[in-house]
Structures are given as C-alpha cells and as structure tokens.
Length: 268
Ligand SMILES: [Zn+2]
Image (tube, rainbow, N blue to C red; front, side):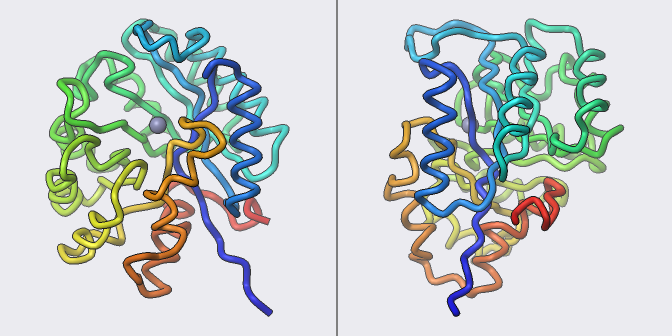
C-alpha cells in the first residue's frame, strides 16, 4: 500500500483579493487538488492602500483575526497565524485576549514589514514580541530586499530575543537568498520558509548546513487556484533536487509541526 505523502503549507492567506470567498474557495480547492495535508493561514492585514487595486478592502487586525478564526473553525486541516498591524493599531491588549480565548487554533503571529511600512526592529513591535514570548508563539516575518523588509532587521531582532522563534518568509524575496541563509546559520532561533524560493536555494542551504531550518510555504492562493501549479512549487512536490526522505519530510512537514506546534491529530 502506498503511503500518502504529508505536506504542510506553512504560509497561506485569505483576504479581499478581491473577495474573501474567492480566496477561501481557491485555498480549499487547490489544497485538495495538490494534496496539501494542512495549512497555516493568515488574514491579509495590509495597513495602507496601494495603487494595485488588488485588495477589495483593508480590515483591522481584530476583525481580520475573527474572520480567519471563523475560517479555520469551519474547515478541517487549517490553523491560523494572527497578522498584526502595529503601525496604525494600538489595541494589542485586545489581540492578547483574542489569543488567550482561541489559543488552540492559533499557531503564531504574522508580521509584514512592507505592507505595514514598518521595520520589524521598530519599537512599535515590542508589545507583540512580549505576547509571542508570553504564549510561546513563533513569529512569521515577511523578508525582502526593500527598505522595510531586509533580513538584517529580522536578524537583529532575533539576536535580541533568543528565546523567541522567528521565521523569515521568502528567505529575503528579490535577492539571491544568500544573506538569509547566512542569517539562518548565525541565529539558532531563526528559521525560513520556501514561499517564492527557487529550489536551487534549498540545494545551497544543504551545502552550508541549514536545510533543517527551512520549511515548505507558498503564499497560496496569492495567484489564485493555480498558485501551486507554479514551476517553483512543482519542483518541491517532485523533489527535483533529490533530497533524502528524512530531509524531504523535514522540509515538507516535520519542521512546521515542530516550530508551529501542530499536533499529529490535526493532520488526520
Ligand atoms: Zn505571504
């Protein structure tokens, strides 16, 4: 009997792109068709309007968290990250109460420096870092080569908070990922995900000894139902770089289970 492959997608979203139901339906349908066992989902908490016209509307962090909670409660095989908006919102105590009340569904916090126009090293993040510490929640942070999102800011925060786990989403998007791999190597509490990361980077990660700190994630359904059909993700599904089973399982689900505290029962 062929054993079913387990895949956890540690980086997905719902939001108004342009409608909430479209993103929810795309995420559910594509997960089923691409054999994703479980996903961590956060609700797009972009803080400022841009010209892309992509987002139907922006919502507060509490409202977004409530919508995300409803989604993960109603659908099996999803857990949530609370997307924080520390630039415009100060109600971190309400967020803390929300986390306490719904702890079993919440696996971490998500922060997006570019969408918040705020570096992760900004003092406005401190109340949320305190929450992460108090409830033992990892923090997923978007990293990219722009002025807000560079890996060096996250590296600084990670080294100042060695007791908190951070995950560098995208291993610094729009770069060759080398700074991010070096940062993973230098900081025991810093991990990475594969969203829009070319699998050649995973090969390099193995060479320098940080493969075990990277987990599969995709940003699904940012490009709609077809997101997981992208050659970038197909190369992971096909294990194009021929990782050993133990390495592949760690990348595709085991590390996410450990870092985000996903229980075995949640995958069934
Ligand atoms: Zn994302």
